[in-house]
Length: 483
Picture 1: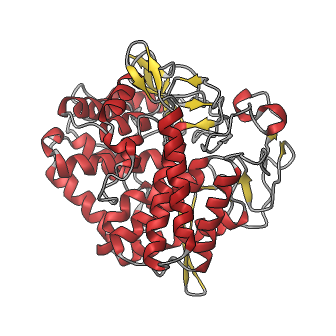
Picture 2 (picture 1 turned 135 degrees about the horizontal axis):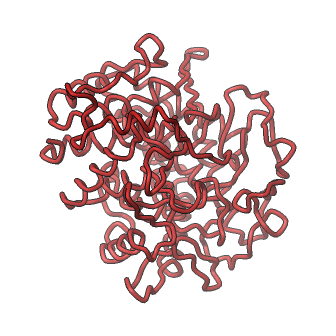
């Protein structure tokens, strides 16, 4: 992904200053219209519009209501390209200001709309189309993280990236979570709708390709077929040692050369992503149990899930002098740990969000029941002991190398709120988000810890939509916090 530069425009700063201490813009408490005009929206959902109207009508915090109206539909308004190809739905989803489809972002962007599918069949078709497009992308290259709609388009990285680049691929950074997110979307879609017709032969083969790729990157039998090097001055964009990364001691975990931020890992066993793989493989097995009972692949997926989980239990716990047993961010199998967290999901902070899904209806994995380990890890990542936890005049939260020191990602504040059961902490997160949009009414990739009008990516649909997911969750479960 391209490096970000901070945006600070006089108009944005003036807009931010126009908000009174109560958050209102102007003397009459009105807010400017910043949502794209109805006639220019890419996709319209009756169910989404109903939720927006309900929130605006029923919550007392009108600035949050305004932000919800802008952010929750942003993916549908601006980033989706939906069409029917030979009677089959096909949905291409860009991230916002980059015309490419990430497997991760495309899932996260439409995820909050899943509960509305039963009430909006057109929205259900749109999400079916995302699943179909993701399957096509996985078949093109399971090691790639981002793709173009045009299968013949050549990447801007073609001449700088030394890896097996094919037409139709925007970027080929191997990230475990890129293959987990399509499984998450498929399983969530199935649990909400009961529809299994989308799980055709192409989908089944894509799932088997995911398992094959995971096994290759366990590296029990050599380094595997993937390597990546980039001609760049950014250390986080390249993979050392001929593109295979620093050595690991094979133990059942899966190597990931890059993080969800698209930054290179330091130690290839990226722990949050391995935990994500544990649940994704189990979800995959459950879908196959429904659509193809007796298929030997069910046992293959489940055995791999158990193998990764056993390795995590054995190797991915570290003793912190202040917080006790915590989950490290990265390990190498030789006993080395990287103690930090990054704002992107999967992260250590986001593990309860990813692993304790309401759709699972049981606690099949060790981590979802180990509350002490989760609590210790949460305390660690939300403290100055995490080198990428920043606190300043504009707020506090987790950032990462991708946008540099002293930058906070709203995504981390949102995840903090969504994984909390404490009213005071949730309200704290809501207040920070309300103050950190820089006068724009939208979320951003990151903002300066001391000045929210300095931010990266003015159009970042994932952050917008998950903000909407958070507000809707609070609206349903703790409406008193939105007064």
